[in-house]
Length: 427
Image (cartoon, rainbow, N blue to C red):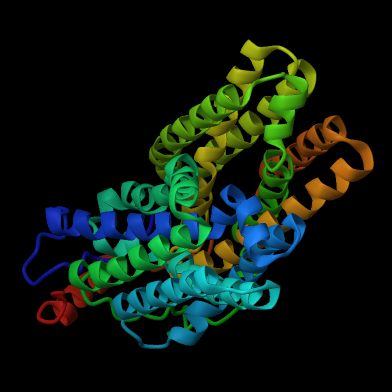
């Protein structure tokens, strides 16, 4: 897996990750946690939010699609627009934009202002999520890059475990507007934290071809990138189509009470965190088999719910398997992308996040359409079919990844970067 030389401070050992560098990764992880919690919080406060804005729950739920689609457009554009800007400053500014989006949501008086606030939030989200993995690889020693990516994106999994429920608790105690105000405050604090803990992060060197000129061709020409993106579309669409309606499955088919549903979903979240770190370790060595295994796990879990959704024990086991498998998808996909285009990390990560978030919106739309037309059982089997399509796509033999510089060139480039940044990378 490609990595930039650590840029923590002058004279640091490039083969060892310091406590300060891990602190920077942790702040990055907290940032992704707040980003995803901000995106998903309307799910937990949908009814009081709709009542407060005097709109229907469906209209309030549409705010998630607005954010997702905005992120899908923003993330791929970020590397093209940043130029030589310091990535530390960009991330901090994006968290301020995210804070503004949450603050605007907190004071929104109707559907129009809500849409505007969610567009603002989606811009901040696209920048932070689009850069998180690429920046994480630059903060640590080469041997720790996979773990750094896992930690950076663990905020995504943690948001599903604790973020939305915590926001719901705040909403129940102080009102839904207070929950968004708390997220706005947290985003501002993390903006300051990023400025304090991250080193200066100048633009990575432009990739060059054999003629020495900068490469600017489409990443979609890279067969491994293209195969990975198609797999992501099938897999993420399948997951969100089915997972959006997991609560009705647990209530209507399994007959669980509200308390039992909350417990089963908490189990899903805990296993998701386990899957995130386990998949990161495995994907660093073998990204393709790891992602195919996760895909098969999601398909098996949804199939178990379709077959045995009325049996409590099997349902609980299926949801745990689902959490374990899907919890590793984000980090495994990111590692696949970075390994496929190791010398264009920012660009491929932005493209990946754009496709991923677009697939989320597609999955939510497709799930609602199928449920309305044919019911939950048909939805579950449709999700199984989509995971099968993802598996077939991943089994196709991808071509070679884009070639970066050779080992000798990479060592020389790393040394040059260390020399270039040795006196100007302290935070």
